[in-house]
Image 1 (cartoon, protein in one colour):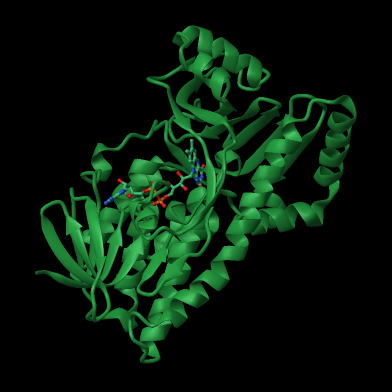
Image 2 (cartoon, helix red, strand yellow):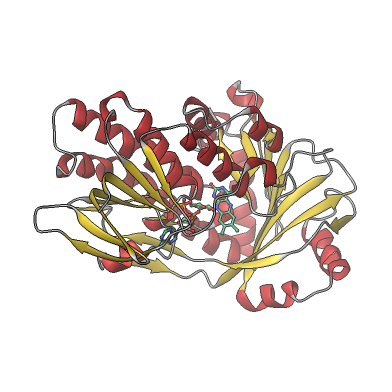
Length: 397
Ligand SMILES: Cc1cc2nc3c(=O)[nH]c(=O)nc-3n(C[C@H](O)[C@H](O)[C@H](O)COP(=O)(O)OP(=O)(O)OC[C@H]3O[C@@H](n4cnc5c(N)ncnc54)[C@H](O)[C@@H]3O)c2cc1C
């Protein structure tokens, strides 16, 4: 029966980054790391530049990934740096602009397709002899072993591990198996995602419009400067109606919702709906087990922070485990897992609370609230130190 020291379930961006970070830590030399993934991982050559499932990766996380060798030139060519971000309130004159020049940085972050990011991580992992990729394979059952560690069923195959890492996304089977209580908030929305061709160039600016029924984001894509990925979060029924529209009719709706900022738009390829939710696991660890990324917390995409929080989890947990190993602690010692939770929970919780507050604030249509919102946004836009702090908190520096 193959035995691993660490078994990571889920080779999404977070699980793959964690496995890579741990494999490269000098203190983890000699560990056997397994990475299980249901889907066949993509290769960079197969991924699209014009990818509707696009992520805004902060500069801080781009540096983390580059340090792991997971931001190669082939990925950089598929990524679009964005230098500014503009936010409008459609029910008032509220407007805020963030610019990388204000924090003396060359960019605020990069927009990159999720498949390309995963492919770059997998390519870097393939060069790590300590890591075995177990895919396509799915975890179907887990049992705690009497002497510590777990027996894990992958379909008909059984493997053992001392430490189990759940990075298996929002519907985490591992989290469910251990019955970890999860605080849930249903925003009752779906996100419509698509790629648009735009008449005017995006100018490396990420744009977002807040309306009572939900926010619309235009994320600039690499290409000739006239393509954006959209994330249009809408109340469930309205999203169903929009999703059922023919491409031309949907494009007209998008021109209205974006106030014609990029002129006429047309859809490049398919559009699809993704149900949105938000949840937070009551704890991130049990003896011999840790939860990472969306398995631990799912945040509304309006701030583009989900993968950024998850990559920070991966970096912190790999670092804590490496420090514990260097100090001679056992791999299943609870101390590094406790420290990981202490370091990551407050930031994740704050982001979840902020997204809930944003959704409620911008859903409010009463005139006094809309006026207050506009005044608040105008004051915020003038408050340079506060804006610089927000940009730094979002990992832009
Ligand atoms: C519309 C939308 C837009 C978004 N935009 C942004 C953005 O701009 N910026 C940002 O930071 N975040 C964004 N996010 C959030 C981001 O996509 C997630 O936070 C991120 O994908 C989480 O990564 P993960 O690796 O934790 O989970 P996932 O990406 O869900 O990966 C989990 C992996 O586990 C695998 N798996 C599941 N079950 C099993 C099993 N039993 N056995 C083996 N493998 C399994 C899955 O196949 C998958 O590959 C967005 C989300 C949505 C819905």
